[in-house]
Each structure stands twice: as structure tokens, then as C-alpha cells.
Image (cartoon, rainbow, N blue to C red; front, side, top):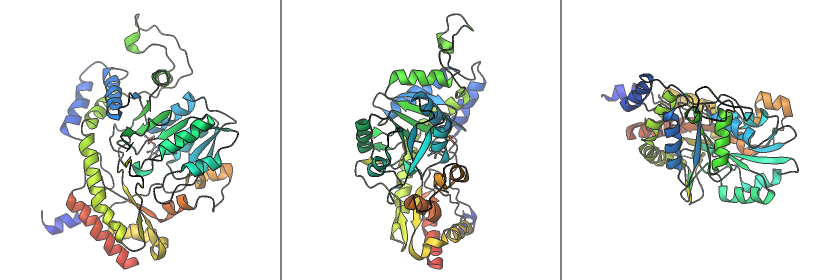
Length: 388
Ligand SMILES: *Cc1c(COP(=O)(O)O)cnc(C)c1O
């Protein structure tokens, strides 16, 4: 490939990694009689649980939002209850609380990791607090041992939003197993994809079984457990948040490459992290030596003279053929729906606000070659120089 061609090629922020094996896995389902509620779904749950380790139990669902909604339902959250939630997260973390009639109480994040901290959570706990919801920002683990200790002291459950945390561990234990429930997303730009999809994880087999029933209309018996076809009873108020067999087959196939996926992300992240030497640039990264990040992306925060120039910086990178994103574009309490519902104090979440207004998310996924990463570094330095 000539240099001119290479320079003209755009580097995507995220691109689903779909192989011939993935395609064959999906087609095999279409050639058979079972399109949902079948053996591929159960196998995906078992294999994802094995990947997590520590006797995890998993329930495959239709999206990350579905997983989070089921978590709120399963914990019995409702009107009058408060749930502590990160200000710096995807809106789904908060929507899952709102949809059961509970109220999210937002807390700011740490500026170095983008994660909520035990101190900030402790300060927000009140008499109505019924749960704590945390997100592992960019796949960097929150300090779960301390957060769980705090939650246990107050007798309240912890929900982990693991949408960016496939492969996130602390001292070997996978995110989503510290709290009572973990919620994963398989949306196309996440670590692995099923088109749309998600997973709930827990170490409690009874809770997993209950969530599995609520996911599927609250029916008491799965398809396979019915002795007389078509006969079942309904034991809970359910929904239909099932994952199809086509999606499950794709998820299983994707999961087979997870180690290589994570290895490439870690490598690309390290190579890109030299950007921390650029003046007025900070790289959001794990601070705890026990932490293993899943390296979803690399977020830089622009400080000093670059701070007010984030949008121009993005435009500059895009002109170099580098596609970027922003995780997440607004602190959730500043989003119009939440602002109008609860009011908004612009000074309340300075670190979440800095990430939303002054950060750029750069790609590190397995679709990048080493040369691509070097191109991002070169373009970033050039734009920083130009704007600094
Ligand atoms: C993507 C994402 C979600 C939503 O997942 P969907 O599968 O799109 O419903 C929830 N939380 C976080 C932190 C996310 O990044």
C-alpha cells in the first residue's frame, strides 16, 4: 500500500470484528429449527460464566439496558427509593433506575480514573438509599472491594454497569461479581457484539434463575423443561428481554477470540498512552496496581490552553482521518430529561463535567494496526501543537 493510500484511509473509532467463523455460526442457526430460547443461548450463558470465573451465573438478554432494567426489578427497587449512580456514565445506568420509579442520586467521579469513589458514595448515602449503581469507566475497575465493604455496612446491594468491562478484573476477579449483579452490553462498538445484546452476571444461582424468568414473560418453565408442550404457569411479572439464537451464536463465536481482543487492546492502549507526555493532556487510566482494565478506549482530557478547544481538536483529528468519540457527552444529570426532572447545579460534578466537555475518546480496538496507532499519535501531536 502506498503512503498516500494509507494516509487517505480513515481510522474508525469502533468497528465490529466479524470473521468467517462468526458468519458460519449465525447461518448454522438459520438452517435449524430453533431461533430463540434454545441451546445456543444456554451455551453462551455457560461460556460467558466460565470466562468470568468464580462460579458466575449468567443470563443472556436483549441489550445492556435490558440487563440494567432487570437488575432494578430483581432488587425490588421502586418509588420512594434512592439509588446512588455515577454522573459520568451512559444514560442507561440512570434510566434503569428511573424506569422502576426510583430516583438516581448522582455522584461525581474521580478525575484520574473517571470512576466513582467510596468516599463520594459514602457522602451520598441517606435513609432512602436502597442500592448503589456503579460503572467501570472505559473498562477501568472501580474500587469494588471498598465499595462493597461500604455497601455491606449499610446493608444495600451494588449493581455494576459492566457495559465497557468485558475483561475488567481486580486481582483476578471479574467485574460484575463484586456487587450483587453485573450488567454487560454487546452493542456493536463494545468489546464483543451480538448486534444488540447483553448479559446479567451474579454469583447467586437463585437470583440468576429469577432474572431468567422475568426476562422471559415470568414463565415458570423454560421450553426445555416443559413436559407437555405449550403448558406453563406464570410466577412473576415478566418482560420479553430474550436474546435470539442467532445473537447467541454470534456472541459465542466472538467470545472465543476475547483473549486476543483484550491483548490487542492492551497493546494499542500502551502504545497510545505516550500521549500523556503531550503538554496539557491527561490520560484517564487505572491507578490501582491490582486492576486489569478491559481497555475499551483511551480517553484524553485536555487541560490548560487546550481545555476550551476540544471541539476544534476533534475536527483537527478528523481532518487527519482519525475518528473519535466522547465518553460520555454530558454528565447524566445535565442531560435535558434529568435536568428538567430534578434541576441541575452546574458546579456539582466538576470532574464528570471536565470529562464530558474537555475529553476525546480515541480508539484502541483490535481493528487498529500498530501503524494506525502511530498515525493517531502523530496526528494528535500535530493538532496539539497547532492549537496549544
Ligand atoms: C453502551 C452502554 C450501555 C447501554 O447498552 P445497550 O446495549 O446499548 O443498551 C449502558 N451502560 C454503559 C456504561 C454503556 O456504555
